Amino acid sequence: LEAISAKGEPISPSELGERYALPDDVVDTTDLWIRACSQFAGPEYGARTQSLPIVGQVEGDIPPPGRRWEHLEGVEELLQTYEEAMGLLHEVTELGGHARFPHAFEEGFAMELPHVQQLRSGARMLKLEAHVRAHRGDPAGVVESLKGIFATSRAVKQDPLLISQLVKIALDGIAIGTLTELLPHVEFTDEQLVELQQLLRQPDYRAGMKEGLIGERAVGIDTIENPAGLGNELGNLPLGPRNDDLALYLDMIGQVIDSMDESWVNAIKTSERVDAEVQAKMQGPVNRVRFIMTGMMFPALDAAVKAGARADAASTLGDVMIAVERYHRANGSYPEKLDQLLSLIH
Image (tube, rainbow, N blue to C red; front, side):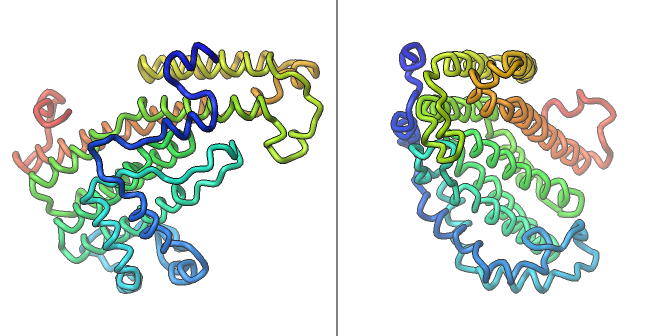
C-alpha cells in the first residue's frame, strides 16, 4: 500500500475522488451532459421510443440512404420532441465534451452510475439523427452527429472506474458502427473524412484502461478491508483478517496495471496468466474462503483488457477504412497495396 501511495496512486475512495479531476485547460460540461441525457430516460421516453430502431424494440439494420425507411418519419418526430436535449448534445460537443460526474466512491462496488449509463441513450439518439440526416442528403449534418457520438465517450475519458472505461468503449463502438454503416452511402468531402479520421485517432485505450484499473484497485482495497460495506450476506461473514486476501489482490491486479504500459499483446498475456494464477490459488475449500474477495472481484479483469484491445483495433480499422474510401474517391479505384495508403493513415 505504501508503494502504491508513493507512486501517487489512490488506495482509498477519498483519494480516488481527489484523483478524478479535469485538466485545467478544458471546459467542464458535466451539467450540460446531465441535463441533456437525463431527458432520455423514464416511462414517457420509453413509450415514445418502443416502436423505433436503435432506441426501442425494433431490431434489424436501418436501410441505407436511397432506400425506403419505414421509421424515418417516426424518428424525425422523436428528434423533434427532444429538440432541446439534442441541441444540448451538440452544444456540449462544441465545448469539448469533458465531464466529471458525481460518483459516490465511498459506496464501493455498490455505487450507481446513472449519468454514465445515460450517455448510451444520448449516443443512440445521435446515431438516429445521423441516419436521418443521411437519408435527407445532409453530409455535414451526419458529421456533426458523429462528432456528438464521439463526444459522449470523451465525457468519461477521465472517469477512474473500469465500468466507465467499458462504457467509453461501447460509446466509441456506436460511433464507429454508425460511420461504417453510412460511409459507403454519404458523399462526404475529403475534409470531412479527414476530420472523422482525427476523431478515431483521439482515444488512448490503454491509458484509459490503466486509469480504470487503478480506480478499480482503490475500490477493491476498501472492499477487502471493509467487507461489511457490501451490504449482503458476504459482508456479514466472520472472515477475520484479510491480509492474505488483500496481498494476493494487490499483487495480481498490480501486474495487470503495469502491463498496460507495454502493449496490448503483453497486457492480454499478463491478464490471462494472472487470471489462471488466481484460479489456482482458489483451489480447495480453505483457500476459497482465504481469498474469497479476490476470487469474487478478479474474473472480469481479463475480459476488460481484451475489450480495450478490441476497441483499439476497431478504431485503427476505422481509420484505415476511411483511408481506403479517400483513396477510392481521389483515384477512382481501390488501392491494390497497403503502401498506397501510408500517406492517408495515422
